[in-house]
Length: 223
Image (cartoon, rainbow, N blue to C red; front, side, top):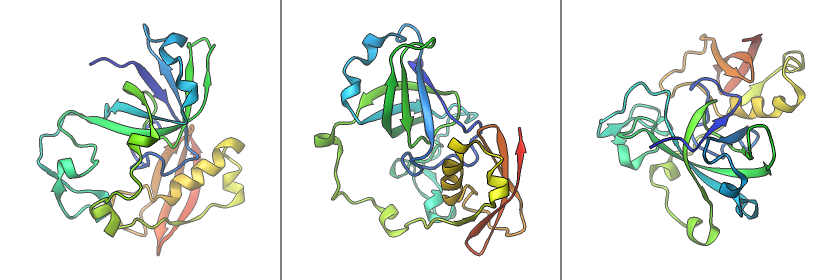
Protein backbone atom coordinates (compact mmCIF):
# COMPACT_ATOMS: atom_id res chain seq x y z
CA UNK A 1 0.00 0.00 0.00
CA UNK A 2 1.13 3.54 -0.65
CA UNK A 3 -0.03 6.79 1.02
CA UNK A 4 -2.72 8.79 -0.74
CA UNK A 5 -2.09 11.75 1.57
CA UNK A 6 -0.30 12.93 4.70
CA UNK A 7 -1.86 14.73 7.65
CA UNK A 8 -0.16 17.73 9.21
CA UNK A 9 -0.83 18.45 12.89
CA UNK A 10 0.59 20.28 15.92
CA UNK A 11 1.80 17.00 17.46
CA UNK A 12 5.30 15.97 16.26
CA UNK A 13 5.72 13.02 18.66
CA UNK A 14 3.59 10.12 19.91
CA UNK A 15 3.62 11.27 23.54
CA UNK A 16 0.44 13.15 24.34
CA UNK A 17 -1.49 12.26 21.18
CA UNK A 18 -5.16 11.60 22.09
CA UNK A 19 -5.88 7.88 22.28
CA UNK A 20 -9.01 8.18 20.14
CA UNK A 21 -10.18 10.54 17.44
CA UNK A 22 -12.76 13.11 18.53
CA UNK A 23 -11.62 13.20 22.17
CA UNK A 24 -10.17 16.68 21.65
CA UNK A 25 -12.33 18.44 19.04
CA UNK A 26 -10.13 21.54 19.34
CA UNK A 27 -7.16 19.75 17.74
CA UNK A 28 -6.94 20.61 14.05
CA UNK A 29 -5.15 19.01 11.13
CA UNK A 30 -4.65 19.38 7.38
CA UNK A 31 -4.87 16.40 5.02
CA UNK A 32 -2.68 17.04 1.97
CA UNK A 33 -3.06 14.65 -0.95
CA UNK A 34 -0.11 13.07 -2.73
CA UNK A 35 0.25 12.83 -6.52
CA UNK A 36 -1.55 11.55 -8.54
CA UNK A 37 -4.47 12.21 -6.14
CA UNK A 38 -3.56 15.87 -5.71
CA UNK A 39 -6.50 16.86 -7.84
CA UNK A 40 -9.89 18.33 -6.96
CA UNK A 41 -11.58 15.50 -8.86
CA UNK A 42 -10.43 13.06 -6.17
CA UNK A 43 -12.55 14.95 -3.61
CA UNK A 44 -15.55 15.74 -5.79
CA UNK A 45 -18.69 15.41 -3.64
CA UNK A 46 -16.86 15.30 -0.31
CA UNK A 47 -18.04 18.81 0.56
CA UNK A 48 -21.47 17.30 1.29
CA UNK A 49 -20.19 15.19 4.20
CA UNK A 50 -19.53 16.39 7.76
CA UNK A 51 -17.22 13.52 8.79
CA UNK A 52 -14.74 11.18 7.13
CA UNK A 53 -13.11 7.89 8.01
CA UNK A 54 -9.34 8.10 7.70
CA UNK A 55 -7.31 4.89 7.44
CA UNK A 56 -3.71 5.58 8.38
CA UNK A 57 -0.47 3.96 9.44
CA UNK A 58 1.25 3.88 12.84
CA UNK A 59 4.46 4.95 11.11
CA UNK A 60 6.35 5.83 14.30
CA UNK A 61 6.15 2.27 15.63
CA UNK A 62 9.50 0.61 14.93
CA UNK A 63 8.17 -2.81 13.91
CA UNK A 64 4.79 -4.54 13.54
CA UNK A 65 3.62 -6.36 16.66
CA UNK A 66 2.44 -9.98 16.49
CA UNK A 67 1.36 -10.22 20.16
CA UNK A 68 -2.07 -11.76 20.70
CA UNK A 69 -2.82 -9.57 23.73
CA UNK A 70 -2.12 -5.95 24.64
CA UNK A 71 -2.59 -3.74 27.71
CA UNK A 72 -5.18 -1.00 27.00
CA UNK A 73 -4.54 2.34 28.74
CA UNK A 74 -8.26 2.48 29.62
CA UNK A 75 -7.65 -0.47 31.97
CA UNK A 76 -4.66 1.18 33.62
CA UNK A 77 -2.09 -0.54 31.44
CA UNK A 78 -2.05 -3.62 33.68
CA UNK A 79 -4.82 -5.89 32.36
CA UNK A 80 -4.45 -7.71 29.05
CA UNK A 81 -7.09 -7.93 26.33
CA UNK A 82 -7.04 -9.52 22.89
CA UNK A 83 -5.41 -7.28 20.31
CA UNK A 84 -8.55 -7.41 18.14
CA UNK A 85 -10.70 -6.33 21.11
CA UNK A 86 -8.72 -3.07 21.43
CA UNK A 87 -7.58 -0.09 19.41
CA UNK A 88 -3.98 -0.42 20.55
CA UNK A 89 -1.32 0.98 18.22
CA UNK A 90 0.62 -2.29 18.57
CA UNK A 91 -1.02 -4.30 15.78
CA UNK A 92 -0.03 -6.89 13.18
CA UNK A 93 -0.23 -4.46 10.24
CA UNK A 94 0.06 -1.13 12.04
CA UNK A 95 -3.24 0.21 10.67
CA UNK A 96 -5.44 2.79 12.39
CA UNK A 97 -8.94 4.15 11.80
CA UNK A 98 -10.13 7.62 12.80
CA UNK A 99 -13.41 9.45 12.40
CA UNK A 100 -12.61 13.13 11.80
CA UNK A 101 -14.84 16.17 11.34
CA UNK A 102 -14.45 18.02 8.04
CA UNK A 103 -14.15 21.69 8.94
CA UNK A 104 -13.77 22.84 5.33
CA UNK A 105 -11.98 22.03 2.09
CA UNK A 106 -9.53 24.40 0.43
CA UNK A 107 -9.86 23.57 -3.23
CA UNK A 108 -7.05 25.64 -4.71
CA UNK A 109 -3.74 25.82 -2.82
CA UNK A 110 -0.08 25.34 -3.83
CA UNK A 111 -0.44 21.84 -2.31
CA UNK A 112 -3.58 21.06 -4.27
CA UNK A 113 -6.94 20.57 -2.50
CA UNK A 114 -6.53 20.38 1.29
CA UNK A 115 -9.03 18.88 3.75
CA UNK A 116 -9.12 20.75 7.07
CA UNK A 117 -10.23 18.41 9.87
CA UNK A 118 -10.66 18.43 13.64
CA UNK A 119 -10.61 15.86 16.42
CA UNK A 120 -7.29 14.45 15.22
CA UNK A 121 -5.33 11.70 16.95
CA UNK A 122 -2.27 11.56 14.68
CA UNK A 123 1.25 12.91 14.72
CA UNK A 124 2.49 15.37 12.13
CA UNK A 125 3.34 13.72 8.81
CA UNK A 126 1.26 10.58 9.39
CA UNK A 127 0.71 8.63 6.14
CA UNK A 128 -2.94 8.37 5.13
CA UNK A 129 -3.79 5.18 3.23
CA UNK A 130 -7.42 5.90 2.42
CA UNK A 131 -10.24 8.39 3.00
CA UNK A 132 -13.93 7.42 3.05
CA UNK A 133 -17.06 9.45 3.85
CA UNK A 134 -18.83 8.83 7.15
CA UNK A 135 -22.42 7.79 6.38
CA UNK A 136 -24.86 8.13 9.26
CA UNK A 137 -27.41 5.48 8.27
CA UNK A 138 -24.79 2.70 8.26
CA UNK A 139 -21.96 3.99 10.44
CA UNK A 140 -23.89 5.30 13.46
CA UNK A 141 -24.92 2.79 16.13
CA UNK A 142 -25.84 4.85 19.23
CA UNK A 143 -27.23 1.87 21.17
CA UNK A 144 -24.23 -0.42 20.58
CA UNK A 145 -22.27 -1.87 23.50
CA UNK A 146 -18.62 -0.84 23.87
CA UNK A 147 -17.25 -3.71 25.94
CA UNK A 148 -14.83 -2.84 28.73
CA UNK A 149 -14.82 0.80 27.60
CA UNK A 150 -18.37 1.18 28.95
CA UNK A 151 -17.34 -0.05 32.41
CA UNK A 152 -14.08 1.92 32.64
CA UNK A 153 -14.86 5.54 31.78
CA UNK A 154 -11.76 7.72 31.73
CA UNK A 155 -12.09 10.88 33.85
CA UNK A 156 -10.42 14.09 32.71
CA UNK A 157 -7.90 16.02 34.75
CA UNK A 158 -8.26 19.52 36.12
CA UNK A 159 -5.62 21.68 34.41
CA UNK A 160 -3.86 24.55 36.15
CA UNK A 161 -2.38 26.68 33.40
CA UNK A 162 -1.40 30.19 34.49
CA UNK A 163 -2.33 33.08 32.22
CA UNK A 164 1.34 34.03 32.08
CA UNK A 165 2.37 30.65 30.68
CA UNK A 166 -0.70 30.35 28.47
CA UNK A 167 0.27 33.63 26.81
CA UNK A 168 3.35 31.92 25.35
CA UNK A 169 1.07 30.00 22.98
CA UNK A 170 -0.59 31.55 19.92
CA UNK A 171 -4.18 32.61 20.59
CA UNK A 172 -5.64 29.96 18.28
CA UNK A 173 -3.72 27.13 20.00
CA UNK A 174 -4.53 27.79 23.67
CA UNK A 175 -7.92 26.09 23.87
CA UNK A 176 -6.58 22.99 22.14
CA UNK A 177 -3.55 22.83 24.48
CA UNK A 178 -5.74 22.86 27.60
CA UNK A 179 -8.16 20.29 26.15
CA UNK A 180 -5.23 18.04 25.23
CA UNK A 181 -3.80 18.18 28.75
CA UNK A 182 -7.20 17.40 30.29
CA UNK A 183 -7.02 13.96 28.65
CA UNK A 184 -3.95 13.04 30.79
CA UNK A 185 -1.09 12.45 28.30
CA UNK A 186 0.86 10.24 30.71
CA UNK A 187 1.25 6.50 30.11
CA UNK A 188 -1.33 4.62 32.17
CA UNK A 189 1.37 2.88 34.23
CA UNK A 190 3.06 6.12 35.36
CA UNK A 191 1.67 8.04 38.35
CA UNK A 192 4.71 9.59 40.05
CA UNK A 193 3.46 13.00 41.35
CA UNK A 194 7.02 14.41 41.37
CA UNK A 195 7.86 13.57 37.77
CA UNK A 196 7.95 16.39 35.21
CA UNK A 197 6.63 15.43 31.79
CA UNK A 198 6.92 17.30 28.53
CA UNK A 199 4.50 17.22 25.61
CA UNK A 200 5.59 18.73 22.28
CA UNK A 201 2.79 20.82 20.84
CA UNK A 202 2.74 23.44 18.08
CA UNK A 203 6.45 24.25 18.34
CA UNK A 204 6.60 24.27 22.15
CA UNK A 205 7.41 21.79 24.90
CA UNK A 206 4.66 22.05 27.53
CA UNK A 207 6.03 20.76 30.84
CA UNK A 208 3.82 19.61 33.68
CA UNK A 209 3.28 17.29 36.62
CA UNK A 210 0.12 15.58 37.90
CA UNK A 211 -0.86 15.32 41.55
CA UNK A 212 -4.20 14.32 43.10
CA UNK A 213 -6.10 14.57 39.83
CA UNK A 214 -4.74 18.00 38.91
CA UNK A 215 -2.30 18.67 36.07
CA UNK A 216 -0.08 21.67 36.77
CA UNK A 217 1.80 23.31 33.89
CA UNK A 218 5.24 24.41 35.10
CA UNK A 219 6.90 25.78 31.98
CA UNK A 220 6.63 26.27 28.23
CA UNK A 221 9.86 26.01 26.23
CA UNK A 222 10.18 26.71 22.49
CA UNK A 223 11.36 23.67 20.52
